[in-house]
Length: 133
Image (tube, rainbow, N blue to C red; front, side, top):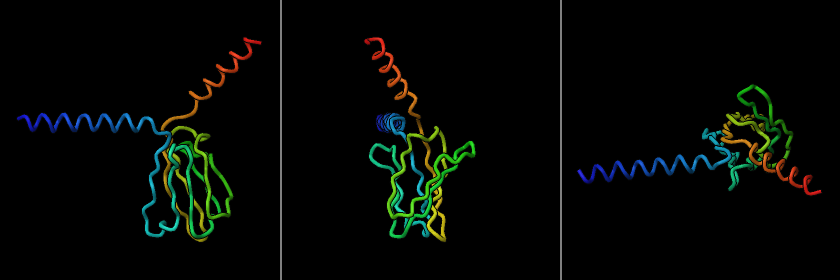
């Protein structure tokens, strides 16, 4: 009986910790695990607000399609390394396509929160500065 209670308590604490940690992240990356996509290293930086792409061959173009079917990222890169900021993307799911002729590598980035809080803070600072003058 004690063992059952301990296991239930431990699983509850673990699940609450996972949920709290996920809410602090800016974005979540769902990598493409296909064998043909292993030439493209795609990951998020430490703060999870920038997509980092790295490859042995040239990355020609990167674009994304949001849940509203809008292209919020549409970049011609033509390099082997690229950093794409995610803070300008709308909240929600974005399907990214990295074009490496002749293949296209598809992966998903979910933006979990937007920068409206940061913008609000900046606007309040501007109001405070105007009031002082």
